[in-house]
Length: 480
Image (cartoon, rainbow, N blue to C red; front, side, top):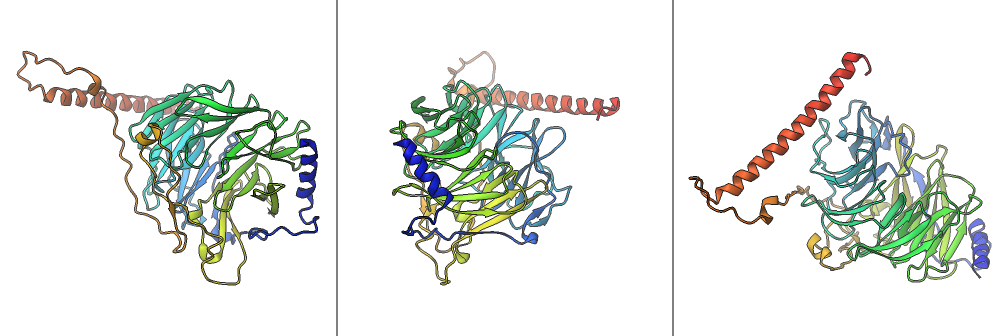
């Protein structure tokens, strides 16, 4: 029975060595260690916004952290090599007019980052390879479609330029950032959306919501294909992520407010594959998943520890491995994609722990005596090339990520500029009849387009002037 299964697994979690037969796994001895102080990033004013996002995003080139800032929202982007103390005047990315709530690096271009904010917009940024020399305030594209704050941004895992946003208007919008237009809009959620996770090929995504339901959505059919009421019985926020084999891993709370994790088969939501109770702490557990090792790292907001588990096909399905503990509680966490880890040190994961004033990398390694490349630790992993174009995905095509070998370690690709081609509204209009004017008909659309562009520029400049005048009046009135 499910009750019996839960009891068995609770025993397994509390005492992983209690069974007489030791389970064979190459990840039984994963060893977590914080880097030396000088290899961290100091003097970062981490955002104090009360929103359960990770506040941190990392890729093989950059570390991005949402920071405190006056007069709008901002985040810090540092090249990974720029360790040590961060100058308090270091330039920020400052385009949002409200606090930034979530950031996500594009999996197909290490220089492209998406952000979303309380100002009801999402923005996509092109970060130069070198460190910023002045504040970056011009996004490549602004995505406007939500009527309330936008709390989640998530890139499609295999299709180029597809970005999902979820807002407090309970709306999910999927965009083509290459044209800046919304492709799909879904309003199936009656309440606040807590989390969104794509599956491996991006054909489905799962969500958790304040109405206590776990949903699996097919965006191209614009429908919910499976749902489960209260996978965790508590009313506190849940999180859910897809595993590589299509199951869903969840974190939540029991009715008695104990933290709990679960594993579910979305084709049969009646019974959990596994359900484990953990502890009575009240921080939301943020799961970070490694599809190559089928491991999940659980980082609770306000916790000072990271627990990690291996998901397998044998009972009890979710195996507790170990806990990395440190003294200070974490405000957020970033998780490095597999292609950014150091294969020469048998590093299988790297997390970036946010504290009040700094960011501390934590390396997860599997001790090995040999210096040779460890094939069993590093199967081919998802590379930076997209598997398809946005139009192909929209037409119903599905592709798994294009894999790359880890044998030579990670070599960062050259920065590619993200070109945004806004669709011309005039293209869909019937061609204008030849007027009595001496103008050539072919030049009319060009002129009209130029007028439209100039109008848009003037409007944006007027908005900027208004903002500056408001700031000026605040200073003159003594309120700033």
